[in-house]
Length: 390
Image 1: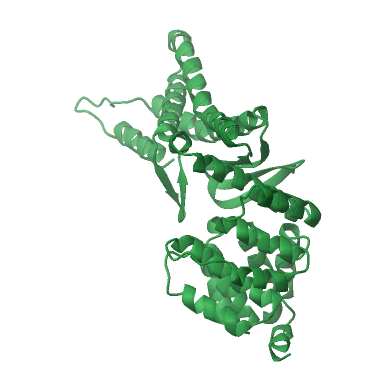
Image 2: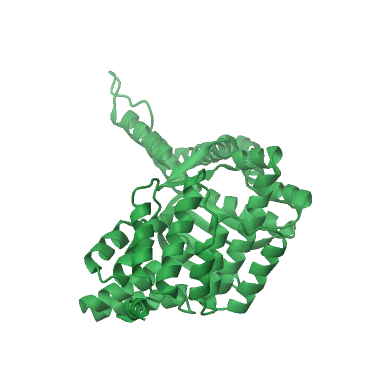
């Protein structure tokens, strides 16, 4: 998107600049056409890209849970049955949430799903090339021709950008292009295993979002039978399932029993952070939870989820100002479902304590939509200290 803006700025500069004879290097109609084509092509191609992933996933027998269109702050979302569409502010980037279990077979099905989007861009390019003779031979409007050229190059850049194997850094998160994901699938079975694990994680989250704790537990046990429950992200979802079943005390014991891998800093941070949450909700041991947070505060890198954990612990300790600071600092784009749900309940509790009932009700409503079971609802004031003293 930033490249499109740069190109439009260059074209506008060329139009404003005049040669010695008073002629302009480019006509205004070309600039208008290219601007219209660029503005329209970006979101349309984004929708085609993510829908091609989803459609190919369905065709390969995969479970597809939804797509995200764009990046930045969320604008809206809607559900089509169990398929969730999330729309963000900037029409650049996106994701398709899907996965499949099944070893080598699953590996190549995942590859087919990933390759579907670049193939769609190739198909669009082929159609545009075939239509070029007609457009430039019959159209008398520079606006239409400019728009056609813009759509062609935006699509070409999207194809190249997706095929080049590289990491993408967006709002503090690291993702991979389709080209890099295909390369990883080619080189390693572990990449396919990550997709299998993601499938179960998304499925469990989808169950929790609609209040189906039993279905979430069934998916959790199925993943365990496949020996897929050793990743940090999956373990935090396991805590959420135990919380949905009302067993936060068991979740705290489970979290404390996890082995620590000092060689994997990100996993250590994730596991320690959510262990602190389980300890707060399960036993109310604020001293232990705070010690974990103090340890995490000395480590990098942080994520928004860790800052949400800091806020939850601070609220439980009655440190409302600190909690507000952590909640404000946590980037929404970095939050997974557990962090969003915990953060929404924390904001509701914070505004309730400040006496702002209107905002407390608004956040309470948002939290209930995210977490209808009330897994991450903040403990009642004083309950945590009673648990410690008891």
